[in-house]
Image (cartoon, rainbow, N blue to C red; front, side, top):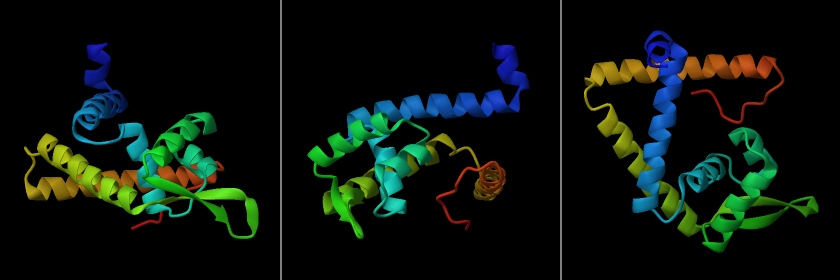
Length: 157
């Protein structure tokens, strides 16, 4: 297994993401009012205001049932609210409340701090280069996904 990770770029990046996500889950348990999964839902709503649970499930690649549970908890906590969609009174969209915006901002700062600590060994020049590499790779993957029928909810920088 270790040999595979040492040789495979995919395995290295995947292992990093998995381990970092586990670490951040523990950080969220200790230092925030919500779980990391709930933060990801808040992040989607923050970046795509008045989005539906279905859109969130597609973006997060999770079932609507999994998202529904997170939405329910966030709504009970006062972080989000449901709004009737204009033109369709049976359909609802989700929006952050002021409390939700404050939580998102606090938690995003926390994430940025931990990412910064993790990559503190990089010079500013190396950090800028790594950021450019990730950004370019992200858009290449998204463009490929778009050609395969996937929709991209984000705008290219």
